Image (tube, rainbow, N blue to C red):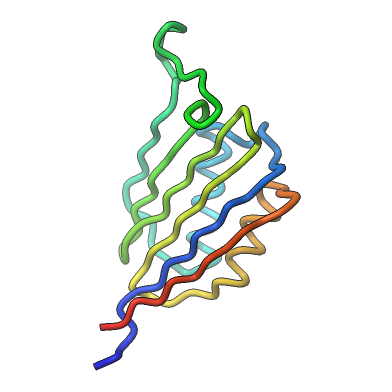
Length: 125
């Protein structure tokens, strides 16, 4: 008992480069991140305004942007990149251990964040 069951890293990135908040750059982010933390990527899904008529597009600061879920063999990585606020919220959960500090550094550097808030949650069996 008390064996590691899962690890979760929650990041709030502020002052980010909003030019990276698109499907192409986020796809690169997920590919590089999975390689960096040695996770096997599976399906990738986006939620954004791509292809929607203007009247259906999001306009509120807390919803306008691009969100994505990158499933990994051991769980998932979720990103919410908000255009109007320059914020990126990253949540990584895996039952396979990874280096939280190195992962945070990678995310900060990729999104060119000016500041970051973090939280690490360790789940035990």
